[in-house]
Image: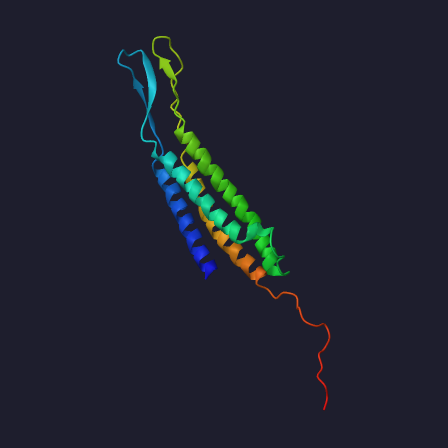
Length: 186
């Protein structure tokens, strides 16, 4: 029962993280170049900064789901040793893949959020023929890449936990006598 509740709660966290990453991609900041009132300087004007919050929210929800899975499985390193077999090998492979995809998703979300929050404060003079202002924004697809890796992480960590549970629930060593027990003959 606890594993079903864990899987459902991690699924909900991953689903929220995925939705927030998609929303962040849709609501990325855009910038326009404006000229001041005296027609001397040009500068960048940025619109809404909501995608930074969406990206950070996706980052935190994905991290919460990963922490839940790793605490439940004792991060694959602690606790009783797993029974040998295919489930243990599969769990090890999925454990590594889960962390790799998690790391890539977190980097995409964090980099996109930081880049989206950064607004250039430069201005360019029209009188002195300065180079034109570049209004830098986050590239299209950074949050979408994070959302794709959230999806991969979500699938892989579910399979990891199932493989871990199968390897953990295997037959343990027999704790009884090594010999054949016999009763008295009458």
